[in-house]
Picture 1 (cartoon, rainbow, N blue to C red):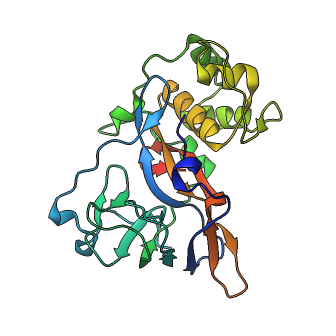
Picture 2 (cartoon, rainbow, N blue to C red):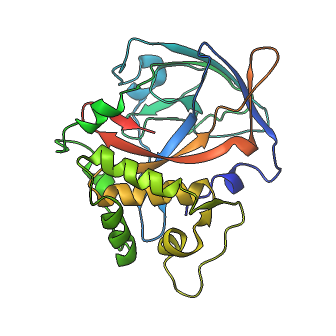
Length: 273
């Protein structure tokens, strides 16, 4: 299971960054996606981008909507990431240093700079299709992210549970909604100290069918794996929730806001959290 919290900082609730947004309801600040599924977890694929992929040359992104949000971000001096925390569906980035954009994972990264003390601005275009639009999205993934359907060595019990939960679904969106409803039901308990699976039991099967207790990484991994089993390309995104609004109009993000969430791919709409 991917772990974000332990990789970010050892201290609880330490400041990471502040930002100002033209949106009254800012969402996730995304760093990268983990799309390579091994037998037990999602991991990040290698990021490679030529000089032409510098964000100063523009992003290879088509704005999904006419709405535009501007976010100005200031990162603490003790926070040195190689990935740039950004709102989802970024369309432009203004940042000092050699930062490059990988369109496959929607990641802005650097091999020579870090976020320590960095100030930068991101323009983004929120993509908010309706449930009805997603329910009528094409079923066939033509030329889409086929690698994000790979699901090696998934425990048969997980496959069986997924089939049971989605038996009445009329679309991939409906099936994904059935899975989400199960994971957010009263059967499950959120805890940062989940029990370890006994012996050689599969961790995902143990979480879904026995303990039903975990934190964001377990939930995101479960959703992403089960989405792949219904034929919906998926991955796990890592970054931060929106944080806490401050009296001066800015938002404060701390290590407590570190988060992982699933992203699913829908034809005509792309990757959606």
